[in-house]
Amino acid sequence: MKISTSLLLATGIIFVSGCTKPKPTHTEALHLHLIKEQKASQKIDKKIIVLQPSITMLDTKDAQRMDLQSQLVRLKEGIIGGNYDFNKAYKYKYGATEGSALKEDLTTILRNEGFEVIDEYQTYDDIDYSVRKSAYLIIKPEIKAAFITSNVKKEKSGDTITEHGLVRVIGTISLVSMEPLSKERISTKKIDLSKMQLEKPYTSIRKVDTHYSYASAFAIGQSLGKMTANAIFGSSEIDNTQNTLVSMVNAIHAYAIKKIKPRLQKEDILSYENDIKEIKSKKRY
Image (cartoon, rainbow, N blue to C red; front, side, top):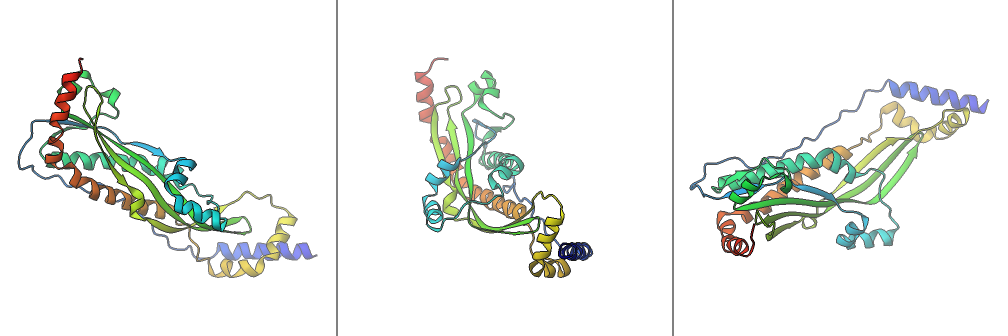
């Protein structure tokens, strides 16, 4: 009888919760492509090739080495990382989009400075010899980042696990300038993402597979005190992991462009000319 009562109560809760009005949700949008094209005051007779950015997600050891403070906090408090994988979501869902936007903004910055920019190549190996021979410089952007979760707290209610925590970004965005024929590095300009101190709270809600049975119904019935209010009035919890990640991608891109733009002034780029000539004089192709 006790099991049957629990089953009926659980069924009633499921029915009532199914009738509740869905909670309104807000979807964060990507806001990239920040640089507007302007007419250059003077055309510069030098070609620059901008490649597609490479994206590397730092592994655990790299992330811990670059984020020692967060690591010590986790060890002290016994905190473990969350179940939601921000790194995988970034790499496979947003990384390519941000990379393309970064390439486009870099291209526009250089064109605004008066340079002729070639942006049709993904990697160095894609570039024909004749194109490399006529180019003044190659710029290869590199994104190396990790999203680290901390202060993670998890609660399970029925077949739902709710996770609260903080997520922050570390890593670098680099611009590697190379002599086109030899691939010799002329300069590497690094943007340290950890200096952003970008950290945001998040809530992850996910379902776990459960085998429905009288036993599970009884377990649900036992947790009525916690579940009834949410079932009748609607839970205030909303999974915001995607919105959190999108807002962080927007912030990272805006920060990177703000730091990069002053480093791509024509005076800086033209200052490489003597080094480029010296490399070409030593190499034979």
